[in-house]
Amino acid sequence: MTKTKIKELFASIQGEGPYIGYNQLFIRFCGCNLNCQYCDTDFDTQNNYTEYAPSELIQKIKADYDLTKIHSISLTGGEPLLSADFLKEFLPLIGKKIYLETNATLPEQLIKVKDLISIIAADIKLESSTGIKGTYKMHDEFFKQCTGVETFAKIVFNENFSNSEIVEVTKLARKYNIPLVLQPEMNKDKIQVSSNIIQTILDKCLNEYKNVRVIPQSHKFMGIE
Image 1 (tube, one colour):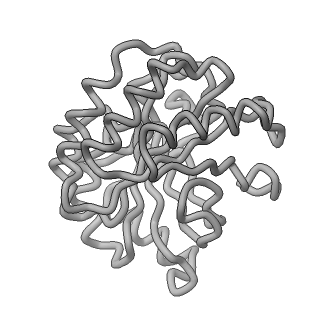
Image 2: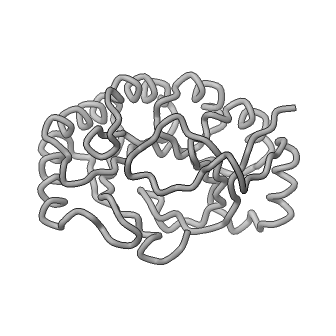
């Protein structure tokens, strides 16, 4: 029986992307294959986690949450696709839309569960904000596997978002016809990018690709998880 480490379970309002405002049940998985400079998420695997088998997790969820009030189940982390074998057993049990939040670097793991996913919220990792090089090839392979599933891309950016990066990310979005959501870096509830720079970056992106918008992390303004 496959088991995985879950950092936390909680019901809250989705604060990012085009599904902002929907009530979701968040399942936060431990562990990530990347180490982004801006990451403020605690997905530590050393302590404060619970290990579940698929049947155990579904029992916990049904006992503690009213799923009739939940729009969808958000798989978040960390990187949920590191637990793809667990998800393949667990997701058929849940009976709700599945919203996958992913760093979009594990296409082979996505293939295992793609048919069970309703919405893919995929990051595009910029070197200027994450410090990670060479992500575009990984993202290209990932988005290739998203065909047939509703998908949008989220880009966390700061004032160092370069013109060459703008060309690369819009080329990727255009290739796969996916919406781009620009998300300015935040420190707690404060946006770390000036409004003038945000507008300039949005205008540059729109010069390359029309399906682009800016959506900050609204849950931080609201003071919710």
